[in-house]
Image 1: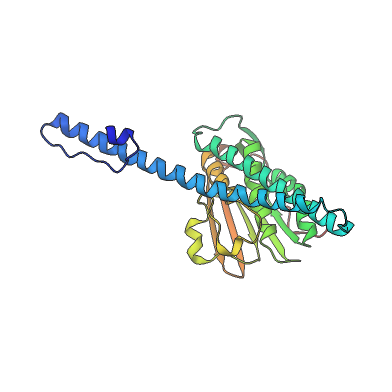
Image 2: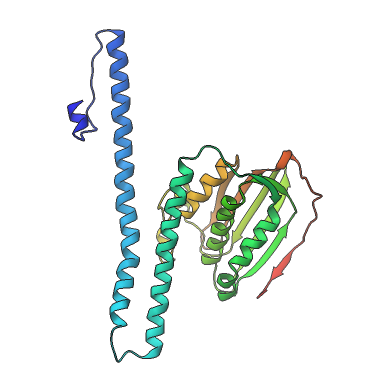
Length: 279
């Protein structure tokens, strides 16, 4: 116990004199194992988070120093300011994701649930990201049935914003993103597919791991927390999330959520294929 208190989580005891001692041994060793696991997670969090946090801070510092030069052309000054704004937004997003993830990781019950139209929520999230997909010339193809779910609307918005934003980020210039929503066996099933770089097969089992980023995705701004957060939120709502991908061809995320009451509350009206270009 003194070794354990001093931080040596590898220590184990081996006594088997009486049933009481054996029970004490098993409890002690299980505690040491759990503490060791927590310590590894803490170390992993500190190492990865500090690295992710340090990169934009160094970038902001460097470009802020360049802005002090008196003979800096206006175009370069504006370019550096844009980088500082972008990196500051990245830091803010990272901090928000960490706080949200910390909150939902310890959450077991979803509060503030209400019935609402899931298709309308997805449309609103797409509009919120309009600047991103318009800037890349992305064509959005939507086929959304009007389905009702009982969920925490604010939490679920984080899921759609993350998935659609990722689809846009990993799409090629002037590419397309397809979003579908339909009802299958009492579930609302949404898919978000992009036709971009895809995910290597070796990375697929880790795509929802905290801070995980594949080699191909490191050149694109992100912090490896969005998908972890999305997965946790979906599971808290009794649903599931899965990913499939073909490298250099496409990536598709599939989300299943229980419908309100297990059946569509409102009549399902197929919205049909809607190609959105610049609107």
